Image (cartoon, rainbow, N blue to C red; front, side, top):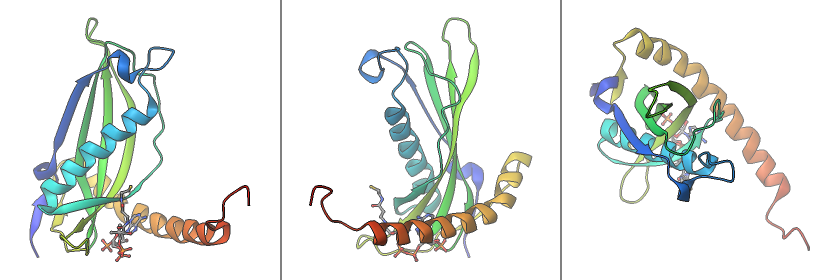
Length: 170
Ligand SMILES: CC(C)(COP(=O)(O)OP(=O)(O)OC[C@H]1O[C@@H](n2cnc3c(N)ncnc32)[C@H](O)[C@@H]1OP(=O)(O)O)[C@@H](O)C(=O)NCCC(=O)NCCS
């Protein structure tokens, strides 16, 4: 089976926070940050798989600190763990005050991206090989997170079935 290093998928996306993307408190909209997270994770997963990918799930995103207008926001992503067709991608979000240079980790997230062909049929991905201590630690704990996601998906699928598609006013 083909193997690739975590660093082969390493992806960085940096932008400046400007008014169209801020709320009444002049901080970045959470939804905008989530879109950035999905975007950078998709690029990292595509670099790893060298095929099309879809987002299967995003684990919780905790917004640890606000990101202010004028800050830069830098997202770092790489594939940490792989199954047969799925890839776990770790995303770290760092905000930087451009004048003082103060930096803080504002959010971290794990996403699961699945490799698919042109008919959206799942396809196999290379096994990821961790090298640094951070990569090794994230890789070793990836199996448990993947198992937890499987349980969560089953639970949510049952809930979706239970609540159904009826219009709320009917
Ligand atoms: C993700 C998707 C391709 C999985 O297809 P599927 O027919 O359910 O395939 P499988 O059950 O064989 O799952 C394929 C892999 O995805 C993983 N997976 C599926 N759903 C998952 C979820 N919710 N969270 C994490 N992993 C998931 C499986 O564990 C499996 O991993 P493995 O091959 O590494 O063991 C399919 O559910 C899909 O197309 N979902 C919609 C994706 C989408 O539209 N994303 C954009 C959101 S708007």
